View 1 (cartoon, rainbow, N blue to C red):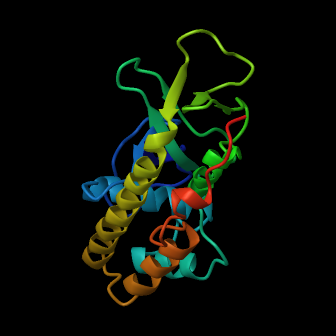
View 2 (view 1 turned 135 degrees about the vertical axis):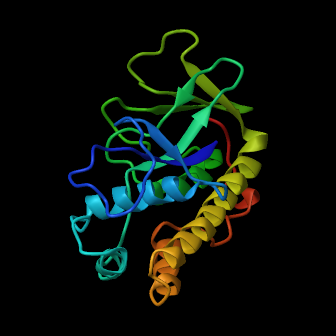
View 3 (view 1 turned 90 degrees about the horizontal axis):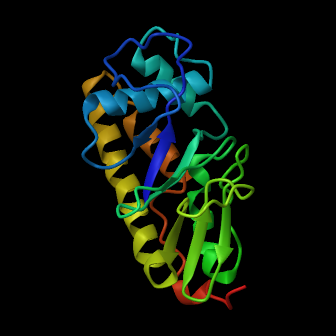
Length: 208
């Protein structure tokens, strides 16, 4: 279970180096992201808010700081290494929605987007995820043990915290030292990164 953003086709070419990824692929966020991967993230974010054509990275970062809230297409990517099945967020799911997964033990499905419509089934010991709730072919789901969810979400949180550190380093290297603290604080707050997770005992409930 990893935090990830969806790679979209950019409407402009960034002023900095960025990782080349196919449109509709996924960029996993973590502390070890390269400078080019961080550059891709910032390009996707700036393009989403129509400021990628700004004159320099500092101008772009300042424009993003002026937004009431920043978010980016993405969420929680769930991969089963044994089956090879991956459940990805769909359209209109944002990275900031990732904490909705805390409510799953109480029988409340997180928002995972639509078209296709990812769906979560609630079983006694596991949460079963389908990429498309209308297409439940055998072997196309991922089971997440209820007992493992808290640790998995803690891992997502740590990945995001680590990515903010990588983003901070990138910003300092690209002339944004005067803005970096404010920008990281905004990204932390808007994407719900570093706040403590709700203890599992406060969200658990009976399986449906």
